[in-house]
Length: 146
Image 1 (tube, rainbow, N blue to C red):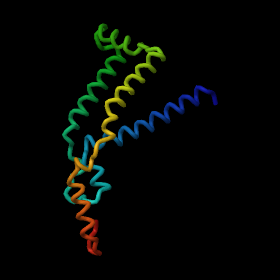
Image 2 (tube, one colour):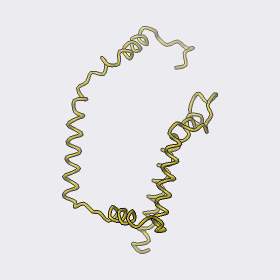
Image 3 (tube, rainbow, N blue to C red):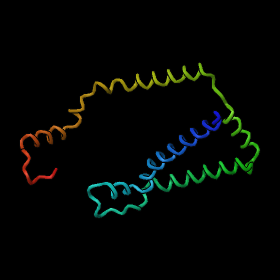
Image 4 (cartoon, rainbow, N blue to C red):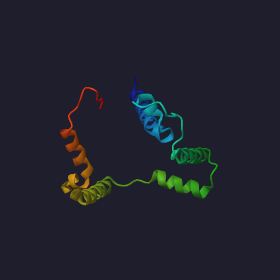
């Protein structure tokens, strides 16, 4: 087999694996109770196909993006918009600038989030301490399930 055939097979494999992961990730946005009703402990009063509050936004935005992509492919959009999309598609940033920008973004993020490492979450979550003490004071019996 040629390198081109191997490259195409690898591309298809990556595409289908990515598609499966994305579909598994976005399914709870559209149907929030679907996984819980299938794999959860409490499934009695769940409607697995009840739409979530973000499902409308997700479906509409995906239809708009897909429609725009099809219109772009068939050259049914105005030439001004087509030229802008072409400029965006062909725009390239040099590798050195990319690495510098990535280092700056990571540095700023690490600098801003580092103080969170020294937070005492035990003081913020006082109810956790109470629950922990309650479990220590009340031992489990055979009849308790959880």
